[in-house]
Amino acid sequence: MLTEEEILARLKPGCICKGIKLHTILTAIENGADTYEEIAKRTNIGGGSCKSKRCRAKVAALLVKQNQ
Image (cartoon, rainbow, N blue to C red; front, side, top):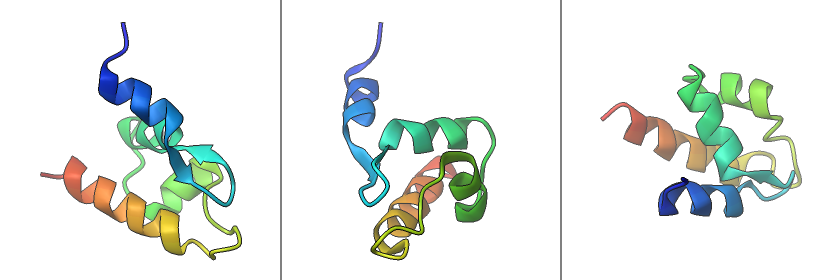
């Protein structure tokens, strides 16, 4: 059964411009991606109309949290 956090991650945006869900980014991190570039390559985030400003900041925060 999914936790509340997992359910919310499936609903929340990770990259608004490209329509990629937060869950997709978290899965990439869980599978070993440890830089923005690697996560972008695996998930197709970035390169949208904001030029990665929103998702890059979100990924940076997730990576810091992961490394704590």
